[in-house]
Image (tube, rainbow, N blue to C red; front, side, top):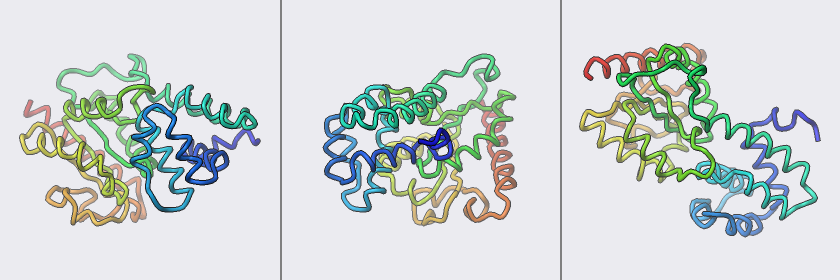
Amino acid sequence: MDKGYVTKMRKEVALMELLLELFPTPERLRRFLHFLPLGTSVLLNLPEEGSMRHIAFEAVDELRRRGLIDVEFFDRLIEERPDYDARIKQIQSEWLIDINTWGESPRPEQEPQTHADTPAVFVSYSRRDSDFFEELATHLKVLQRKGSIRLWHEGRIRAGHEWEQVIQLQIKQANIVILLVSADLLSSDFMWEQEFKEVLKRHQRGETVIIPIIVRPCAWSDSPIASLEVLPPSGKPVSLSPDTDRVWVDVAKHINKAARRWRDVK
């Protein structure tokens, strides 16, 4: 196998491709998932119909969100298909390095010390929009380095943590909530039934600010965020902009202004 195989592909796609090879039918994949810890809850959130590729991608997404892609997960894959041992271990090494890196608490030498008046920023997004999140995070790095904001996203959940509890805690502590809005986020039952209800209550009480960013074309004007101010102005999706860097610069400025207003009020 080419050493650059995993690094050339997103780790999610690499794992999805592996699952497609190991479990070529929905029945075989569902049987494997059924016997995983919390596997029943994963199965409940998988689509009943669609291509095998789509089902496998959703399975990876659900497993990751629950912190289930750990050493035990890959050990079970090897038990199922020992003939794929080398392939599984290669992808495992990439996933576990990534999980450990994202899951570690910020070290003093990595991020400046923040203070009580540093607003916490929570970012909610679909894994299908992770590229947009990475672009946003890059443009917010200057604000983080200055100690103007504290950025949190679900990628910081460590394997084995109760992911729903962790997310709910972060939402309750967030001063600014950023939504990367797309059709995938709008279709997430967990997002609108769990995350957004709590965020909207806090927004209405003046405890947090919601900043929806339209990243891909979707029917956002018919969604619960329709009454909120969205970015980019007029709701033109980031994906349709000829200069996305300029869009993200403007978004970062808007977030910085929101952070300043929060500190002034506080």
